[in-house]
Figure 1 (cartoon, rainbow, N blue to C red):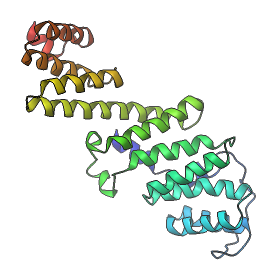
Figure 2 (spheres, helix red, strand yellow; figure 1 turned 30 degrees about the vertical axis):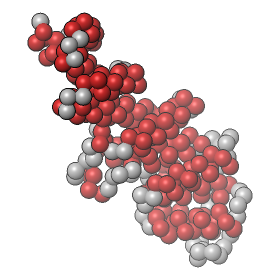
Figure 3 (tube, rainbow, N blue to C red; figure 1 turned 90 degrees about the horizontal axis):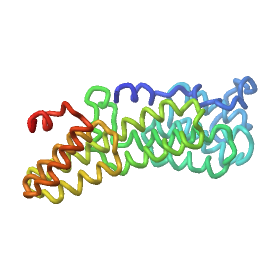
Figure 4 (spheres, rainbow, N blue to C red; figure 1 turned 120 degrees about the vertical axis):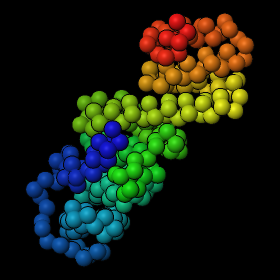
Length: 259
């Protein structure tokens, strides 16, 4: 699953470039040095660098364009392009700030869904590296604030723009993040269980059930909670928990073991 998302992260400049279509076919191919030229020339130069994977040069030119020509369609599109360039350069805070500026400056833009997508992917990508293609991150051990922020941005996108072309991928990422955040809570609860902190186990599992009900890790969490109640000598609560587990996953080993 994570490798699939990595492939999606390799977003083409064309995919973000003109989702609204307002620059297609109208730009000259004439290059312009940084700091010189019309808005169109600066945009073309930055876009050329972006398409060639020279993200640092693209960022520099896009920033000059924004400073020299604060208004107009080229500057509006450049705000999204520079967010993408920052993302590809692993400058996630800058990518998020650029996307936030776009949302603030152009709240009615037909491309605003992409700004939320950039924010979601930026949070999703934190803590990653080129080596992730070989050794994927254990997302349950990544800073959970990043995952929660990523989930929130994707959730905003799909609620506000359910027909967006970025909605299907956002929904997949949300399902993935939901399971990984639930797994983090389960790992933490298991840590407490191993150290005999049974009340902490119960509290952590309750948090998992409240916030991530329906995730793939709910059955194991219920089984762990039942064991914690057994250790606490609370047989009635153990039986209630096993009853819920049996209804949730009748073939779970903890249910089969108890008969």
